[in-house]
Image (cartoon, rainbow, N blue to C red; front, side):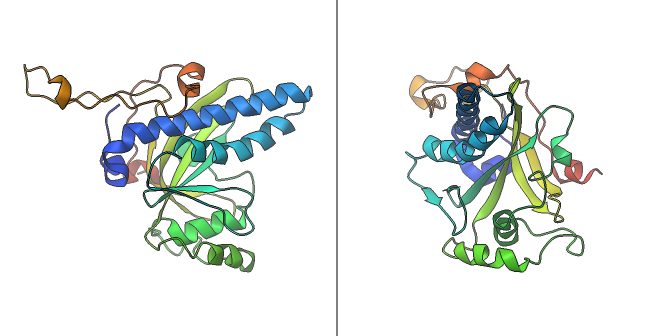
Length: 252
């Protein structure tokens, strides 16, 4: 899969490695949630949902724990640890349970965004394009959470990881990008959004036309960050998607 300008500017040459790590972390979290559902032996999906909620954060931290520029933070009042990779705070959320919802219409959460979510967007989200419509004033209950994030640098950027999945069909798709939080129902305006491939990536070196690249000049395939290779096992191959730029995100 080709590398977009946004991805390169955000993570540099490590984009294939990071995309693969995210896909595998989501798949591991989903596997754990399915295991919890089977053990519970109930038709209710509470075990699946609760396990997925926690494991998606933990699996991300496990996937990138060996990288030198990773920091794991746990804001006061939050039950989850958040991964900051090279100054980018990764925040995964399930935007849909099936393919009937477009990621461009995604809401973050099933109801009112939590105090943590509001604080993250307010502190680290992109500058709103239409400030009069954007949610830029923190409610009183979110102020303590925002203060708990004070030890993170001001130039930290919030990178959203939106995914669709369910207990029957598995991981359907995953996307990443940057968006602003529009209102207290969780509506988003994407500034950039592009798909994350759910199959293992390899990076082919670029050589001159008609000349094979030398072995020691090539870029090696991105190594697996998790030996379970969940994404490659659970998901069908995904054709190369086109990244969504600001025009597509705004519906223009």
